[in-house]
Image (cartoon, rainbow, N blue to C red; front, side, top):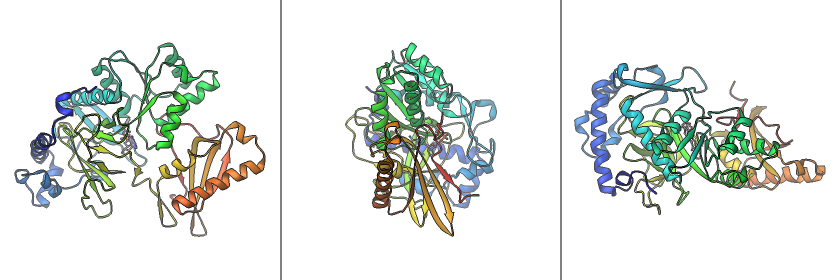
Length: 433
Ligand code: DLL
């Protein structure tokens, strides 16, 4: 099923000419309305009228998260505040939040993209969508909510937290779709089990999971534990919120980015050089239709590649490979680049290990150290010491083989690692004071 047949299956040529028209339009708007962009364009000696083909995108300036901070709170808005009907913000770890504003048309556009995303994930009218993304400044809750209503499904605005109640509602209300972070979906299953319930027997069919990096092995774990199809959804507040890209249920392999609204590029994060499609690097997105806060070549810091091959679902929009993580989450341990998701895929393929872990990075006598704390299941935990020793040795060896780094493994008792209701915190880097 496709929500917007006309746009989702546009032949490549028509899609690209639409993109060019929209790019020219957005460049003109930001040049006229946002002093930050006018200065940047002028400094680079480029006028919006000089954009003649999509290749000219490369002549436009990048936008960084820092630029949003520098223009806090409304400096990058391209319309007067009187036309903004919604404001969201992403908390970030340091300093002021990044603020985004939506016009009425932006909200309509976002709702449509979320409706498209739900349908791509296999949801439809008649579904009961249990929305456990947080409502508030975070875009997850309201973004999914409006999309679910636009789709015509019945949405339960649960928000995050209150896990036992979530489970009761999910069971009693017959929720068929769950929207939350992947880590929270596993937590829900775990708490249900403690309550003597098996989520596998609920009516849930689909999980639309995102807002944090996760691995293919974690997907298998979720699909098994909840008896659902787990679909990866990607987005970020700066660009839209949830619904920038999503996997289709037909292929479950790569996330279609809605190219009539977003222009993706992949760059080398070190040099800023644009890489050919298919190569891995940092995702850069230009918004083509947003009015409130259009962004030119926004550097997402997320690492992925573009999959240009056509998809079996019939959508013509390219796919992004599952995010490997953020370039700023990438750990450099004794010079080796490591993404937490790589460690996750090792852990989740090992028998006896539970899908809850944390990575502690530190420095001892000028040498980086990595400790992996991972929970083991009850049965394994009460096993003999020898069994536990063999298990941690196995993990250590597999990490060494895959990533070439030596680590310390600490097997911990079930349920000792803090559970998150939103984005999981996987890394504690003690080197950063
Ligand atoms: O997390 C929006 C969202 C809500 C997406 C609900 C999906 C579902 P922010 O809080 O601004 O917005 O965080 C955006 O989260 O740059 C990525 O690093 C990460 N992220 C989001 N989705 C995925 C995903 C929302 N599917 C940041 N896989 C992004 C990996 C993801 N990382």
